[in-house]
Image (tube, rainbow, N blue to C red; front, side, top):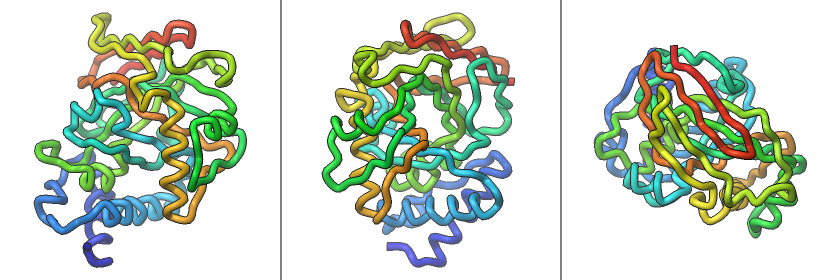
Length: 261
C-alpha cells in the first residue's frame, strides 16, 4: 500500500504529464508495493483536482473488456476511468494530435443511461433496462506512463489511458438491435487495419456496464442517469500519427470519421 503522500505525488506527476503531453516512468517500477486500490486512489485524486479546476464529468470509460485488448496489453481484468465534457467530439472532428501521448484509436459502443444503475447484484438485464440508447464511438487513447512492462496498476492510475471520444450520430435502443453483432471496420487513410464485432466485449457490450455498477458499489457509489458509459474496445488499438484520417464503419449504426491534425 502507498502512503497518502505518495498517492498525491503520483497524481501530481500524472497531471503534469497530461498538461505537457509527456510520459512518466512506470509507477510499478518505482513503487512495486502499489495495489489496485492505490491506483484508483491516485486516479481519484487526479479526478477531483480536474473537477476543482472547472472540468465537468460526463461519464466513465471501461477498458480491457475484450480478449483482443487483454492480449494487446497483457492485462487480464477490466478497469475504468472518467470522461470530462471537453474530451467528447462529434464525428467529423479535427483532433489536435499534439494533445495526446502514445496516440491510438479503439472501436467501441457507448451507452447513455436513462436511470441510475447500482450494484451489488447488477445483471446484464438490469443494465439494458437502465440504458436509454447505444451509439458508436471511437476512443482516443492517451497514455502518460511508459508502455513497456506496465500493469493494471499503472493503467488505472493513468485514468485507464483515456484521452478522448468521438461519437457517431446513429442511436439505437437496446430493444431495436442485437448489440452483440454490431460490427466495426476500422480504417486509417483508406486502408482497413482492424475489424471486430461487439460480442467480443464480455459476450455482450452492455455486460461491462453491469460490471461497472457492481464495481462502483464496492466504493459506495452508483452510475447516474445521463452518464455516458464507454463500454470497451472490440478491436486491438490502432496507432495513429499526425495527419491521419480515421474512419470506422459500424454498418447499420453508421460511420465515424475524424482527422488528427
